Amino acid sequence: MATDLVPEVVQPAADSSRPASAPRRRRRTKSLGRDLWRYRWLYLLLLPGLVYFVVFKYLPMYGLTIAFKDYVPFLGYSGSEWVGLKHFQELFTGPDFGRLMFNTLLLAVLTIVFVFPAPIVVALLLNELRINVLKRSVQSLVYIPHFLSWTIVASLTYLLFSVDFGVIANWIHGLVGGQKTDYVAQADWFRPLIVLQLLWKQTGWGTIIYLAALAGVDSQLYEAARVDGAGRWRQFWHITLPAIRPTIVVMAILTSGHLMDSGFEQIWLMTTSLNRDVADVFDTFVYYIGITQGSFSYATAVGLFKGLIGVVLIFGSNFLAKRMGQRGLF
Amino acid sequence: MKPIMKQRVRYYDSVGSRVFDVLNVVVLTALALVTVLPLLYVLAGSFATESEISSRPFFLWPHKFVTDTYHYIFSTDTFVRALLTTVGVTAVGTVIQLLLTLTMAYPLAKRFLPGRALVLNLVIFTLVFSGGMIPTYLVVRDLGLLDSYWALMLPLAINPFYLIVVKSFFQELPEALEEAARIDGCNELNVFLRIVLPLSKPIIATFSLFYAVGIWNDYMSPLLYIDDSKKWTLQMIVRQLTAANADSANVLQQLETVTFPEQGLKFAVVVVATLPILFFYPFLQKHFAKGVLIGSVKE
Image (cartoon, rainbow over all chains, first blue to last red):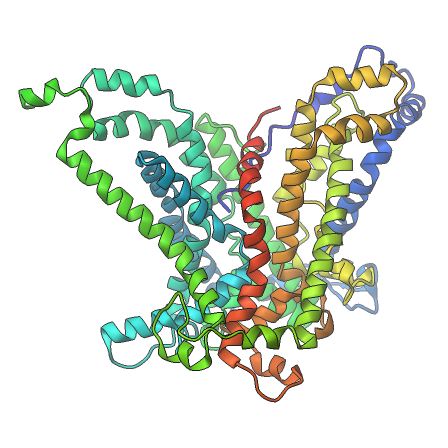
């Protein structure tokens, strides 16, 4: 999540930079037709992608209207009865809401506290590593898990922590003794395992953006500091850390825009009948309600609620980013 | 500070600094080991006997090297079918994704194109807000794509982030080349096919790998859209056998057999689903940093 590509700023005024030869707009319809013809090949190239976005991104947005209806497949989107905010009322007053909110937010907090700082620390350590071969090898190895699927990560967790033959489970059992703990199934161990998985999968990959920032530091700064008698710690404190501070701020803001997104695949794969109370988050709840139980309207309402909070968070964090003098997402 | 320290040209030689260096090497080596040892253990486990898996604590090399599990995997329809399905869907899906991404990114890179800003904003809006799981599911269902392989490819056909990165790449290409081709009478389609695409080989390589890994690893799409277990992908099989909430009895019933190495099978399936990624990893690694960093290039 923290390594999403940062898209550039979009200039709405880009239209005005047309070549001088482009026809002036006297009558709109006429020039529209002329533009379409003049750039027909470009529009033709654009078309398939545009169709994709309309069908698979914007049609679902229209489909969100069923959050305000009692959707019956037989009656279709427009034929189903309009019920206003009934499903939202059901969500807010229902027994699940508090639990879902708590679980989602607690996972977000755990992510910020444990997962977010990890790549920063590792990047700083890598930056101080003076054996280049080792640095490159460590980098190559720690990037690997990013490319493995959540199913693989969940399976590895199971193979290492299962009661029957899990290596780590047995090892802990050997150290602590007592009764064997079923780490994968039990509710108490759900959150630690989720954090552990995130750390294992994303820490290495997360270092890339910080290492790039560190590589950009002018080495003359270090030389000057050394001449002035600054030791290693002081160089770190006064040069290295300030150099990546803007990156940390941007990544923190980007992360906070996704507080409500608790990776569906990861959570779903780690949910068992024993830990559902702590495992259920909005994303997985939508799946249970909608796909498993077929309450499309209620599930859509839950999804819409989550999505709207997401929009608020993204715009809020973006606003914050700009206030702090950083380049935002928009 | 002691006078002797002042005379030293290199501050590195201080004791604290040396201790730190040693600790740093230890910590980072440990980190690398923690990352790869689970993978190596699973690989070793897939070649071990049942009794060794359940009795030996941790090993990277089995006492007795057996390949029963792999024989078994490649002799059952369920696995072979899933493997072929995954390979096919990944190959076709990646081609579709590349085609759509490249053709859409090129016009979006042309600043003079009327309507470009509108489309670009439509694309970026999808990064902020989406219809979500259920409405998308209903669209896929209404298109009649449930239980179809297309459902594993079409809904993911364009990754908006990748699209924007490719668009930025096209914008960086020297305009003069394209201009020359246009003056020579090439239309935009030919400029794209003959000038731009050949110049874009590195980015095509990068994103075909990214897209392929994405489809190979996708678990949510088959979970949502595929009911028919005959159309399952490898990720579904892996999950059914080894996830915490695994439903392995259900899968194992379908396996047409008498006895098989039950634990070793779990190890081997993970290996089969992981190896292609690890095989392509060196190529990925060559390109991915580029992909990440291009994204931050400003217009």
